[in-house]
Length: 522
Ligand SMILES: Cc1ncc(COP(=O)(O)O)c(N)n1
Image 1: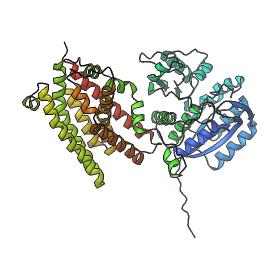
Image 2: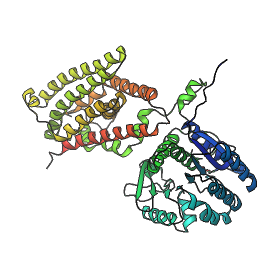
Image 3: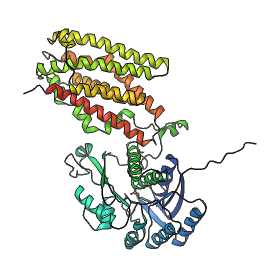
Image 4: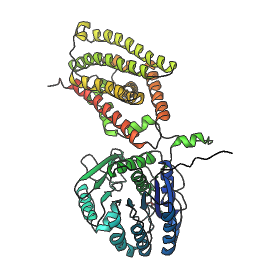
C-alpha cells in the first residue's frame, strides 16, 4: 500500500466569471493562471460563451439561483482566501454574488468590471452597471477597470494620465479599498502623451502606465508597451494573478506588481493561436518542455526579454553619439583618449568580475570557461596598450590614469551585484557590456556609412567585430540563457523583474561611460 500524505496550507482562490470556450479569457484564463502560480483554483460559472479568438458567437447565462448554488457549494466546503469576479452578465447575478460574499465574509475580493470583450461583444447588460457600482464595488479590495470601463463607471472621458488620476479618485469614492486603472488602452510617449495605437513606430518605444490608488497615494507601474495582437484575456489574467497574490498573503502593491509582471511576461511570449486576437501565455515553457511535445514553444530568449524591457536605455547606449562619431571618424581624439584610458581601468575590473564568475561556478567546465574569459581580457589589455601607443597614449599615461566617477560607478556596480547576488545576477550585470559592444562592433563594421580609410578608430571597430569577440558574445549569451532556464521559473515574476532592473541599470551606466568620453567637449 502506498500511504498518501495530504498537504494542507495551499492558498485557495475562487473565480466567479464566464466560460470562454476558446480558452484565452474568463474562467479558463483564471484557472490557468491559478495553476501556474500554485494556488488552488475553484470556479463559479456565471455564463457560458461560445467564443474564440475572433469573437463571441453566443452567450448562455446561468440563472442567478444556480450561480448562488455553486458559490454555496464552494464556500461551505472549501472556502477561499481570496476571490475575483469577471464577466457577471446581469444585475441579478451581481446581486447574488455580492450577497454571498457578504454572507461568507470573503475578505479579499478583486472586481474586474468586465463589460465588453476585446472582440467587441457585450458581456455585461447595460442596466447592470448600476448594480455593479452599488452592490459589488463597495465590497471589493481592488477594482481593476481598464480605461473604457473606467469611462463607463465614471462617465468621464479619459485621454491623459491626469484624467486617469481623476477617474481613480472618483472610482475610489464608490467604496473599493484600492482602484487599479490599467493603461493598456493608452500607450504613452516620452512626454507621457498618448500615442496612436496604430502608429507602429511610436508604439515601439511607448510605455504603459497602470495607476493604483488607495484614496491617498498614487502608485505608478511603468512598463514597456508590448506590441502584440495576442491580448485576449489580459484583464482576466491580471486580476487572477493579483487575486492569487493576495491569497498568498502578499501586500496589495506587491500583488499588483507581480500580476503586472506575470501579464507582461505572458504577452511577450503570447501564442499565435486562432485567426483573431490570440491568448497570452499562461504557463512557463519548462512544463511544455518536460511534456516533450514535438515542437515545444520555447519562451522568448532571456536576452531579448532583458533588452525589450529597457528599449530606450538600450538605444541610448548602443546608438550613442560617441559610437556614431567612432563610426564616421569625427570623434575628437582627446575624447577618445580620455575614454580609452578609462577603458583600460575598466578592463581590469571587468576581468575581476569575470574571475568572480569563475569562482561562483560549480562545474569544472564552467569554471575553466569563465577563467578563459579572464585570460582573454588579459590579452585584450595588452592589445589595448599597443593600440594606445598608436593613438598617442603611452603605457605610463595608461598606468597613471585616475579612475573617473562613471567608471567607478559602473565597475563597482557590477562587482557589487556579483558579490551580493548569485551567479545569474552577476552575469546579467556583465551582460550589457559584452552584448552591447558585440552589437556595436558588428553594426559599425557592416554599415556602409562607417569610414574605414583614414578613420583612426577603424581598428577599434574591427576589434569588436572580429570572430573571437563575437564568439565570446555568443558564449556569454548562451550562458545567460542556460542559467535563466535552470534558475528562474517563468512564474517567478518578482525575480524576473529584478534581473531586468539590473540589466537596465548596467545599460544606463554604459551610456554614462560614453557620456564621460564626450564630457571633454567644450
Ligand atoms: C468569458 C469572458 N470573460 C471575459 C472576457 C474579456 O476578455 P477580453 O477583453 O480579453 O476579450 C471574455 N472575452 N470572455
